[in-house]
Image 1: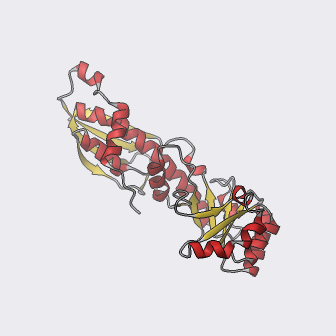
Image 2: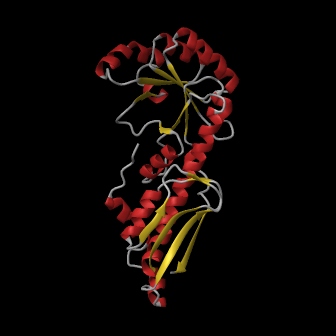
Length: 282
C-alpha cells in the first residue's frame, strides 16, 4: 500500500533544516567540489522512507546511484543508499534524509520484531498499530508500520466505528449501545462495528449480540485465553482484538491467546535505527 508524500511535504522537511542554505559548506568554499555519499546500517534494520530520502537528495541536486526499497531488511554494514553530486548538494540533503531514515526505519524494525514474535505462535494473526503516532508525523509512521508488516488500526475517526467506554457513557452503558446496535448497522451497512470491553461479562454480552468485532483492553493473558474461547463458542464469526500494553517482549504471549488482531502503539516509540553516512570526494 503506497503512502503519498507530496512535494510540499518533501520541501517542508528540507526547510526545517536548511531554510537559507548550508553556511558551513559555503564558508569553507567546497560547495562546487564533486563527491559521493554512502548510507549504511550499523545494525540489522528494516528500511523505511528510502524513496523519500532519494527524493530529498535529488531535490538538493544530487544523483542517486543506488537505493534499496522500504521494507527491505539489511544487515549491519550494508550500504543501502549511494548518491553523487556536489558537496553542497550532498551536505544539504544529508541530515534531513538521515533523520527521516533513522526514525522511520526504527519504527519499521520494531514493528517487524513484533510481527515475527506474534506470528511465531499464531501465523494468521494481524498486527494493528493505533493512531497514537507523534503529531505531524502520521504519514511517516504509517509507511513505517507497513514496511514492518503491520497495518494501521484506524487511520482516523472518519473511517471506522470503534465504540469506547466514553461513548457508552452517553448511551447508558453497554446495554444502551446493544439496544441501538441494529439502528447503527442500518446507518452504515458497509462498515464493521467494533466495541471495546473491559471484562468477561461485557465481552460475552457483545458476542451474543453479534457485534462484528470485540476489542478487549488491558487483561491478563490467562484470563484472555478463557474469554476468547467462550466468545468463539457463542459467535465464531466475531473478530477479537486484544489491546493494552503489548510490545515485542509480550506479543507472542498475547498472540497465543487465540485472538485475530493485536492492537498496540509501542512500535512508534523507541530509539531510531543506527545508521552511518560517509561523504568523500569523488
